[in-house]
Length: 207
Image 1 (cartoon, rainbow, N blue to C red):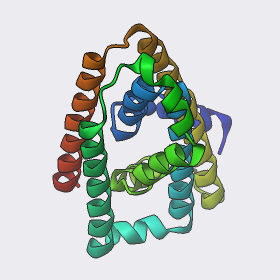
Image 2: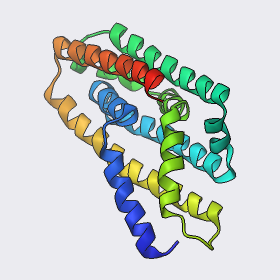
Image 3: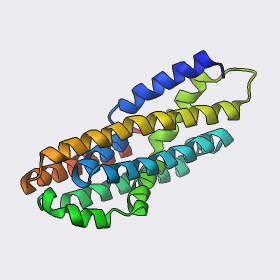
């Protein structure tokens, strides 16, 4: 892959990372409620999922999953159920003032907890498979190793995601410092629940 092609891909990756979707919305909502640290841990899980998707595309497994109605339906159903689960958890989340719960949140914010949430969300999202299968081939150059090009594009997309989503987590931390009432947190929780349930329904009927 030449530099000009890579630069075009990198630019497109940054722009697409800004587009609203389950991943960046989840980072935003959780960072506002639980802080930047939780958001960054979620980002690490999301990006691990992107790495797995990249490897699956490189070896051709993603194309096989997309071609199999049964496998694709199972992945789609799993993703929708997980989004619905997150919606229920957000709706039931306690609405105690953020300032009062900071100590409890720090104790609960284990890396594995937040990483696994991000990883599962990304890995079970069939739209990532569709996106990668449609997006990557546009930048493939004939005569060069396809697998190497895909890996290069996948890593580039991951870097773009880390930068954009990391910025979202930092912005959410800034917002978090400005709001602390229980009422505001309840509104955030319920809004997040509605958004994720809507995304779950959309996932079932859109792909």
